[in-house]
Length: 293
Image (cartoon, one colour):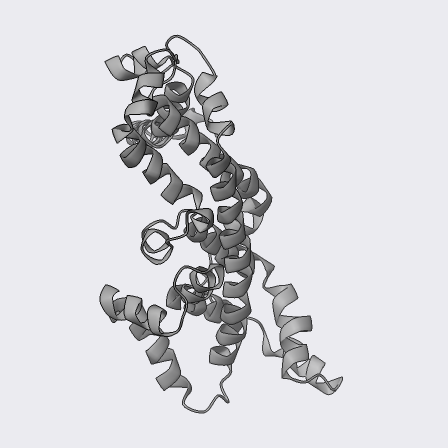
């Protein structure tokens, strides 16, 4: 940290105020994760009594044992990975060529197509037309339907298009002189130079797919195809009315609250493991379009 003596009294007050606000923001952002983790490792009695605030009360891992012993937990976990990995790859397969095409100045009707992509960011047909469209296309209750139905996002296309437009034309011209066609220019020039942007878009897709809940609940009827988030809803809403399960809780040290918290913690872990590997690209990617040379 720079020598604080070089700052005036007003500057020092401003720096300390910023540090205080950043600390408050950090605590407010971290506390929900800390609370859920502590709740998942607390006894069922403490969770029901609302005694858990910051650290586990009556430390026990039985909630995790209960969760990990359930077949549907692993089925839904595997489904979430399928939707996330497959859906992200499918999204990138559409977004990257689409962004590249919209960045080409020689594209016929370029302004119109860019307007149409931006239009989808503000206006949507609605829930019922979308559902009817998925039904008529035979995409209900299928893995492919969940992956293809949400493959394209206008914001991500525009984000990547802006990055492509910022790449110097000299790189493309050199490739053209070597006889490269459009696909080779995209694959060998633009994509290698756009790793931060592509990683940022990929991270957006991963988080969106991993947290996908509503449409998975609406479009999927087969329990063996539901993702982890829909399974969590099943645990919270349906098992709470199950008399047999409620009776078993009387002899256990876990509760609905601790079981639900354990599922949430398990659902967060993969994202926490992936983020450090993409963070260096994400830090560059958030500056997309911030500086124009």
